[in-house]
Length: 143
Image 1 (cartoon, rainbow, N blue to C red):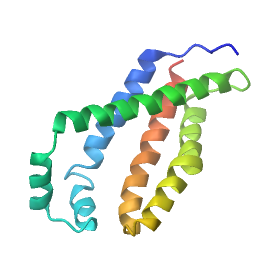
Image 2 (cartoon, rainbow, N blue to C red; image 1 turned 180 degrees about the horizontal axis):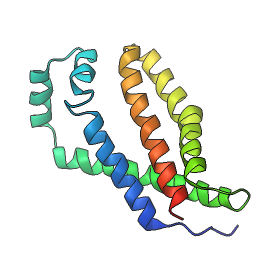
Image 3 (spheres, rainbow, N blue to C red; image 1 turned 90 degrees about the vertical axis):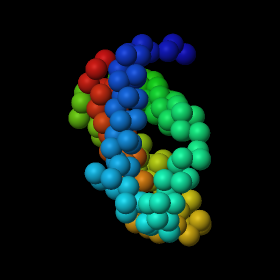
């Protein structure tokens, strides 16, 4: 089976956008305070845990995850482009469908069985939705 061409610069940009969105999403400007509270922790506890963590490894791991997601999405979109037209809107819709079909139900089932608050799942899942749609948009538009 031939492998369709993938724009690796678009993959890198999509990964950077997903990573940056995560930084914004989980910052005090958006959802950090609510996200921390929903986990039953205080901001002081969060800071202490973050200080003890290996931050460079955490950030590298998060970026590698975004890179893997973008790369897989790019390959799927490249294969899809051989049977149907793709553009920014199609890419965003693909991101939505990937979230709806894979990320949302998997993470919801995990949240249910780990007894996590539904609002915590919602904050995390909406980040996935927005990042998947942005990545799909970038990858499909920038072919």
